[in-house]
Length: 368
Image 1: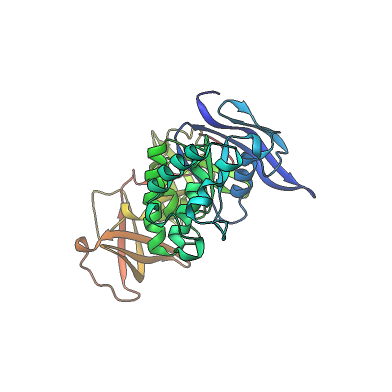
Image 2 (image 1 turned 90 degrees about the vertical axis):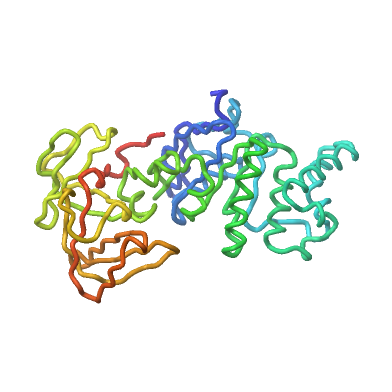
């Protein structure tokens, strides 16, 4: 337990009236990790963050911080700081005084306070603005003040509740880089709540995906993006194409799934130990692993009717309808695809047997 900064052991939160906000949350967070809790509004991620910080009571289970059971301790007795989306700066105090405040309340000597504050405001790039008040600062600068104030006490754990939500796109992009840089320099464990997969994937070492009060998947950012375990994760993260069908048979690590009168070859990941032959299953295929045109070396193909093209930088995503209401996205580098489609034009879409991944049913596992 002492090897982890945070451990959640079968944590539940049920509100009066029987509303279950968090169900059996288990996680182990190593010292110095940047963890993102990701999911739609109402999934339980903010409630979990508030339980870790002591702002919500735990209905059942235990929470440990740096090896200490803090389940029943008030926020003041937990070695944590919290940074909110609203910043909540003192408007009548300047940058230096806002950052200094918590040290002053602890009775730390004036000279020592000054040394620590100047070190922190320099780290967040506000040394030249230290005497300005919040109303004289931009949104990004105010956020840096809030971050410096939260970190000045060097807590074991910093909790961040949608910290970039109040910033515009360009500032958010810049602050993602800054947050990660500061976290690495200080070596402090960060737990961030966000509904933005871009923020989670760009900053976090580990991502916790939640839906309907349940943990759907926990793992490194790349694993979450490349190997979603459930239909929800595949649908919520990245650009995945989803299929539903019936397993007809299995050959080694490949199953044959029948969907809409077509047979698809689908990879079975190692963590699925039992394949329900004859049962209905879901599988996903990443858009960047699909290809347009005939590819005889690929096991899977389907015909689709062209709908539209989405452009993002040097990438383009062509969208095809393969059945009424069932759309498939094919992501390719623009230079590799010089084809200009007409609305309704038919195209063949191919992918390899290894590209598709069989998905678990929701709740089949709660794993690290």
